[in-house]
Length: 237
Image (cartoon, rainbow, N blue to C red; front, side, top):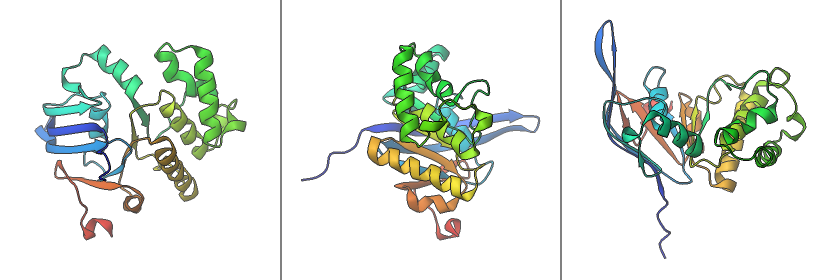
């Protein structure tokens, strides 16, 4: 018997994004099309400046686009108003950035519960879920520590716990290991794989690190303003 086809979380068709500066108008993304299914771990590979961050921001409802269709969790992002995008983003999308963006005056636990509070969930429920996630990510003894008291790897794990708090359909990670040493970067990727396998969490990870590709279900290459589904030997060297 054939396995059922997984739910399609992201569907992008003919996406176009352009910027205008003093030099004129130029394309960042054009004729871009791809899909992401539930439970996939996908690397978005490309050199610095290729448009990876822009694409992630569009998928997360943080940036607009000039043409095409972007559907996330069955919703057309291009037709949603700003307040609708904000609620949609907080409910369905988690973010892990290169810089952890933790609030310095909040503990690890307090940082983790913020997405739940923004959705007006009961605080006690948010705290219970945050404690479970921090424990799951090996930070049970660190939940009362402030960001300055945590290592770089621990801060990124808190950021991952925060991203997971509302059980998002999709986690967008932008160079998540970029500021970590090799050991902490490896640990973070191991935790991505753990949550992918055990929680069926979907990841779309922007990176220029070709060593990440073998650990992903698929690798998409962003170059010349568009995406291809396969990566040539030259790009894997």
